[in-house]
Image 1 (tube, rainbow, N blue to C red):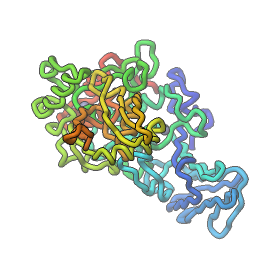
Image 2 (image 1 turned 90 degrees about the vertical axis):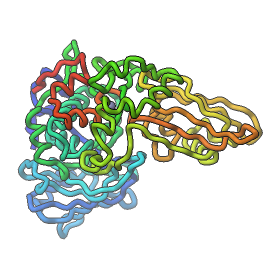
Image 3 (image 1 turned 180 degrees about the vertical axis):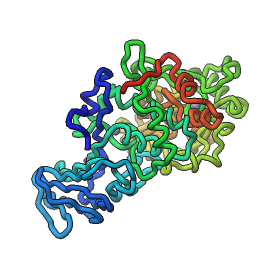
Image 4 (image 1 turned 180 degrees about the horizontal axis):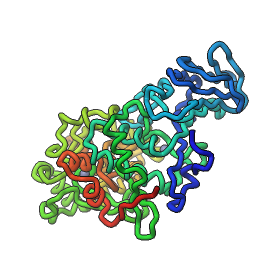
Length: 459
Ligand SMILES: [Zn+2]
Ligand SMILES: [Zn+2]
């Protein structure tokens, strides 16, 4: 297990010069889980209840159940009432998935279009405790082992190794930067999902993934003040990446908007932050595609199932279209947006502000309540807009709005013609994959997406 002197990621700094450990939230309060089943493999794990060892176990199923506010653990033939927590720890550290405990039925993709449940193999230690009416499971493990899991959950372990290294450097930098205050009140550092970055255990790690982690061990992106860059990333920028100012309302050093191409001339006349400019950019999709790393020209849909995360579904993320009837949108908006809960009729939706990549930053919704009174509601931030407009979270907020009206001018349906998947800032994962498939090397991929950052060893 981790050496006692190993810092946790929250206490780590660039001067630490060592690999930290990370505590990842695997089963969270919002999952409202009351039962956890864990298989211990043919590799000894010690089970502790409230700090006292219940013994060493192998090839055993451990069950945790919360009933009437009381947590109980069943290990072998003993069931014990637990006051505080249960800890399960391998006797000897291993990065082999064969030696890892399997936790059954974990939620992946909370609230997203691809939400699923799956079993996950966790290296390192697991700590389980009750928080009111839910069980919490936290996985504590060395950062590099965690990263092997992240790069093969975010994308597939079958990806080209130079891409996997780039994904690893940004995932490591993002984690070490710890710049977002999300989960400050939680008993873990980062969660296991797209809210933070995906980590689904180590069962999907490939030889290429471990090689990628090893070959870029400790490498991070640094800004001019030698701070680790908050190297955000998202699935598909659509051709132009977005600024952090537009996505989160604040700048991040060394994260800037770039054209996801090696042929800048084809982008010279584009200005997608205006309505006409965005329409032109959207329509130029096919014409730009041969030059855009995240387009189907570099990453065709046929290879998505090989290279994307195993929970992701193949689709044309580069350009897409979603149509909803007025009634579907009315019901969805009223349900998902508090300020719109009294909506009786939707009259119009318009984009009032776009970022440099065309992602909608502010959406205006015009509607009537049941008394016929007119309202105008602004929805800010790409995340809120994506949540508002689709029951399974819209791919991105980079869309043009096409409203179909009947003879009397009433709205009948709304089609969103869009591009990209995700917030669009920082590294474009499918673009970086496209670069990897085109035999680009790690340094070139990183300097393409983070042109003003320095690539450096943190340990
Ligand atoms: Zn999170
Ligand atoms: Zn891209």
